[in-house]
Image (tube, rainbow, N blue to C red):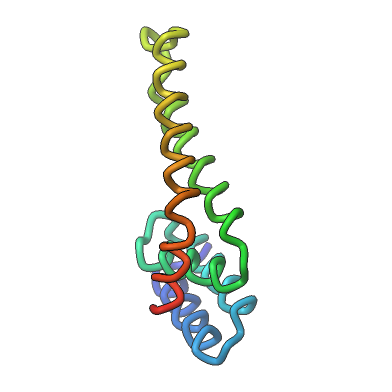
Length: 114
């Protein structure tokens, strides 16, 4: 089992790889870091940056969609598991996906400046 320190060590190794232009190695290190702390915002941002730099923006958006869908599904249980609740939630998710697609070029540019 990995410790939080192991996560930070992987993150730092990833940042070193990224600064040296090894975005694939950086992504692998950031994935290892996230394995120790999946909700760490520093790890998540660094991984997103590596994905953009590798030209994998669509994969990044797909991961965000999967996360948002899982959140919706966790809310639509029991009494809330109704077609109208699902439809409203899915409409909101679709609007969010379309927004992420439109923002993509701006996000990519901002990430490249990091």
